[in-house]
Image 1 (tube, rainbow, N blue to C red):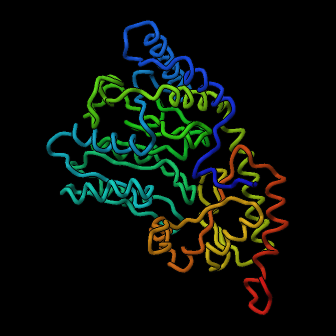
Image 2: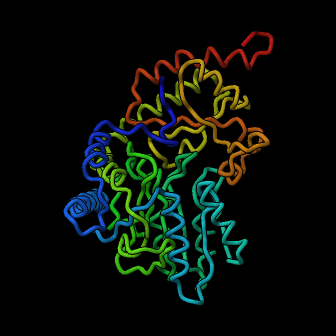
Image 3: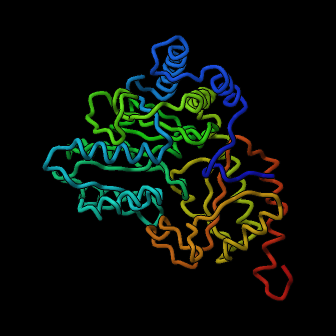
Length: 380
């Protein structure tokens, strides 16, 4: 199989599994217990926290372990909002946040909170002038992804951080797709809080973290003494150790980013040459090196994915599946893309396992399977 769906999830690295196994079998005590086995678990938890902090450029006390990025996002938004001054009751999201995060925005609005969405331009980039216009003295929090999960477009975090500071608002960044794919240093990113998830960078599912800048007030959403009282519940120690091991494996992210960008560009240029109806979104703006979001004319994505499956290629759609079928991507909708084109969206997301041979195989086989679909007189 050629796996080109790394933005959805990544396979756990062998080193991650090796790090987790001893914890599962031997260090299974509760880290809050005072006896010897409990203290062994506490030391393992502390070591994992120190590794996360070292790799991500933060202090160990700034790391809050969660069940994943979704919980981290909710903790950041609800917790920072609850801690805001009484006069600050408005929250600003981007219009292209992950669908799950926009559900939180709708829930806040349904609860009577003022919520605004920053638009994006047709090229997928955030409209900074609109962002500046939305940031007033009543804004408690801005929540922005670092990189879009569909288009791969990089968001102007530094610029939004400056605007947020000027308005006296907190900034939360969802770095789920960014960390592990681009260089990251919490001490320099300008955000007050940053979310991440282990399974996007070859760690286990069900664990993530919220990095919270020291001194920033946060009201916990799950009560308990764990995580310095900021997130109650017994820590998932094996998964936390796996997260730390996955981060420790990253090494020089820039080298891998350059390799993936070369492969991505070869894939896109090859497909555009073999199938002139190919259109690549956000091709000329800063984006993640391994993300390619495209369509083949207006061929149904379901048909394209079926043919990819025949080739043993795992890719994904840009549409969100519902019980009534597929709906156009809200990201492409925010960019002004017509529904028929959005329903043709295919996302290839390359990763650590992707090779030039994989790209060559796809270029040598996929056009032959798709080309007949543009000519109804030939059998597909």
